[in-house]
Structures are given as C-alpha cells and as structure tokens.
Image 1 (cartoon, rainbow, N blue to C red):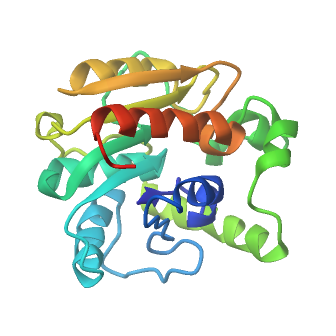
Image 2 (spheres, rainbow, N blue to C red):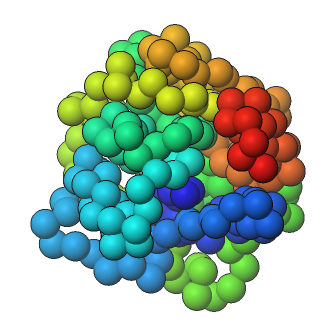
Length: 236
C-alpha cells in the first residue's frame, strides 16, 4: 500500500505499481479529497486519515500489509503504524515529517512562488518531467484541486508530525528513503527519524529532492525490493 503526498494522487506511484505487481497486490489509493476520492466532512486534519484508512482496510479485508508513503502520505503511514502496528508488517517512509526539529525549517511547497514550485520539489525538473506519471489534462486538474485540498488539511498548523503518534509503537522493520537535496523536508529529519525508531534504516539518494519515487524510480524500487528481501525473507 503506497500513500501519496499532499496535492498528489495515487498515480504518483505508477512506477512502483508496475515494478511490484508481479509479486504483490499493490494498491495506491487517492486519499480523501484527492484525485477521484471524495472529501469527507468530518475528516478535517491529516491525523484523522489513518483511522479512515483502517476502516477502508476492513472493507477490503486487509488484515496486514507493507505500508509506504511519501511526504504527507509518509506522515499518514507513520501515524497508522503507530496506532495499528499489528496491521503493518513493514514500513517504507519517503521524505516525510515524523519528528520535530525546531532548528531545521520545513518549507510548505504551497508557499513557493509558481516559477519555483517544481525546482523546490525536485532536484532536476527535467528528469522529473521524463519520469512523471502525471501527463494528462485530467491529471493537471486533479493536481491543481489537490493543492487546495492539501491547504485545507494543513489549516493553520502547517507541516508537523501527528501529535498523537508514539514512535515506540513502530517496531516493524522500517526503510527510510530520502533525497539528499530535499528542500521541503531536509535530510536532517530522516537522520533524526532513523534514531527515533526502534528498527529503521536510512537510504539517501544523491542529486534527488522530495519525490524519489518519481525522480529515480528504478533506484527507489530496487532499494525497496532489497530491503524486503532482507527483512521479510520469502516475501518474493
């Protein structure tokens, strides 16, 4: 299960779906309000989403999964794993907030000037354009609407960890993937999260920004596969 970042849709994980589908059932949903999913009136902040996901898992008869996410999706995945650890066999977090570092500023991408938005998100915009799964007019409309929904979720709190999560509950094997050039959630957060989690390992990609699953999909997929082969023997 892959969870997209704020403003995105499940399509962000197109490369991962193609790579892992021969071995796994791979699901990358549009979270509430994003893409083709409806806004849920009583789900008004990011910390509500993990509990919605639990209900959705029950409808789909998913008792346990490998859970991953990027940015806001990683924040949701961390929170889900902390609240429902028995439902997560392994965790994959990409460039996501999970700890508080007062001296390391986080940039809300919605505050970037339009002409700096893409260069703020990714290290090499040209490479992003080569690999991005978002290519249609409908994609553009969904992304534009998604930014508005992301702002609605953030409200006045900004990009912060779930205040109710307990990282000590996240004892399952955890892979942290970070772009060394991430300007949105800098690498210092990945290093701090690795120290804070009981069983985590950090992989850092050079010349990569906030979206490693799109910027370097092959490297991301190989890193995830190698991690699962080592930590969940026999899963492939």
